[in-house]
Length: 184
Image 1 (cartoon, helix red, strand yellow):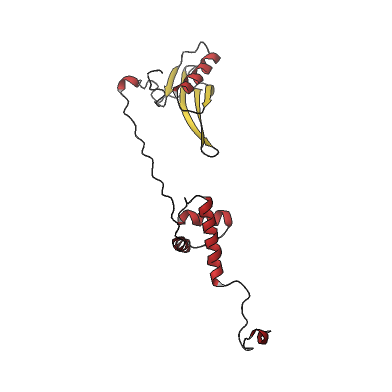
Image 2 (image 1 turned 30 degrees about the horizontal axis):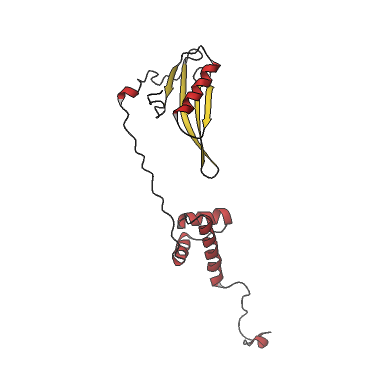
């Protein structure tokens, strides 16, 4: 066989496996595929984690970094969102009467309320406003909505007062914008 190909018969047996450059080519192909699927977001650290977790392939971080540089791929750097809050004047803030006493002697004596954001699907958000009775630790009213606004809070309170019409509770909230507005 070696004579037919033109090799010397005393030469060492050649490997029939893939050459050294093919590993880098396969890795580069995977990196480009991940980069395109993720819309250019992952850098070399995230890229290495994705390679290990999704594809079960382990490569050194420097190798992944070097290939990303050779392929001239740049990750998207996200800026941190600056939260600018307006100082709420003292006339809209109620005094802390509850004073961290989270126990109640009877039902509908003390209620806690707050609004929570839940993310679902591809960028969808839903907001939940719940009212908790401290005596039995049960939800007295709740409302779900697409927006974080005061109508959501009013809907939850309407449901709670329909359920318990004689209730005159002490309401404690997280002092969010809904609870410090003039309408509330």
